[in-house]
Length: 90
Image (tube, rainbow, N blue to C red):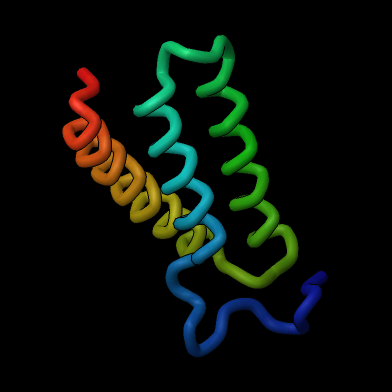
């Protein structure tokens, strides 16, 4: 069952939803790792559910989503490192 009628398309790789949500998740995890109890699991679950919804709705293949997760995680982690250096946060 596909919502849009087809999976993938001319600009299907990578999933922007997965990229954006995992970038936000990793960015916040790195900066707030010890601030909120259970935050890491909660935000990764949130990003994972949104990413899985792309497969469930039939708008992306699993590889598209996995690519988005990897790229988003790298972007979020790198930006968190840069931000922590700028804020002089250990």
